[in-house]
Length: 570
Image (cartoon, rainbow, N blue to C red; front, side, top):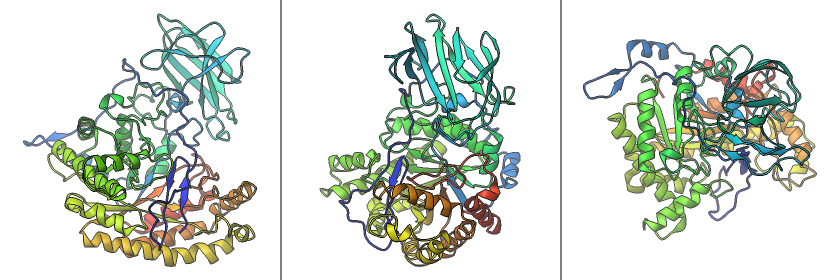
């Protein structure tokens, strides 16, 4: 299978051949959408996020109450063999994770009357990231659902805030206005919601801003997630938070660096607040899969593990992975260079490539052990070592370095399918003459049944050799159009979009997943849940949150597979 890249996460799966170690992988532009500084607020805001009821044994370990165990066994995902990666939060998202949509704003943009876009001068912000004061003619703008095709709910949005100032929503009608509260009638369009702060009192600045979707003013504090977001995730056994944590290139080092629930946005480069990830896992009765930042200190890991232990429903497992694709030398994957540097500094080897792999393996085990200390054992933990699908040598080294496999439960790879090397020169011209049915029959299904099958079989054998389960940390449709000459990209993207929407993709997904299971693969994590089609990839099972399911054949195929393959134990 050809190498591929996805928006914000370059990745490679080269099936049947060993990756040339020094090769540079194609990657796309970043996806953070962060136009601000990622600062956090530490003041009081919103009611505390509730924790599940726990019972505590003499050892101090939290154990599930009978009611929690029963609730998990009755949930729609209780026997699902499939998990999902959540798409990253951004101001252009077509997903509706939060009913308070200010959480997905892109950060403050400084504007000035009469000036060009973004040329308002430096904003004076509070330590928490709110606007402290504005100069004459200056105002601050934050974008929400901008340029997402109008795929968000219309109606009367309620804006709540603390402090004193003047807020406007560009292009939308104000229904009512009173201190600390506004109601604005929003009409979905390509401009989204353009939140503008025109005045703020420096001694009592506008802060704690909430922009609440119609119908959720009375419930947003106790249930922050949109019901349709929850419903369409309800059958996934595991939620992988790699993109929510902004894992690739994460700047997080210390616990104090993390995003909190009180931050002005959850789209910064430090990821979503852990509290929300735990609350989402609890709401879905889904096992969370966390990707620990590559620079995180032991103290960060310990505090992270402690919060998860104390807040997560004890009937759920905790999946732990150190960073993401620490073998990948492309684009935003600064974790790979970091691991290489650390491996060389520690004298693990003089070989720069092996230094990366050895440090990744060693640091993974160190993190596993911290979690085990916090949890009082590993009964609730799933410890994951990962490597590149095509590179069995690296996988062998990850598992065997200092007997790391003895401290792990799963070996994870990426399992994608697509069109081999037809999505780049010289074969792209041939591909552009083909119809979706021809591509499925002549390229996609033969690839799934041969080269992809062989790669999965080889990795399953490697996992068996070391006594760990084979898991897919990512996988699915990998149709990308970013490696062709500029004039060919638009028609190729259009063709791939047509192909991804083709009704036969429902059966393609079912065959692909059935093959994964028959080979011996365990949990399969789809990449990802919701993403609009673009040249960087057709990654989302859904293109937008309220897409009619009869127009989403890939989502239907995954649901069919889940329903037909109940899997009590993973």
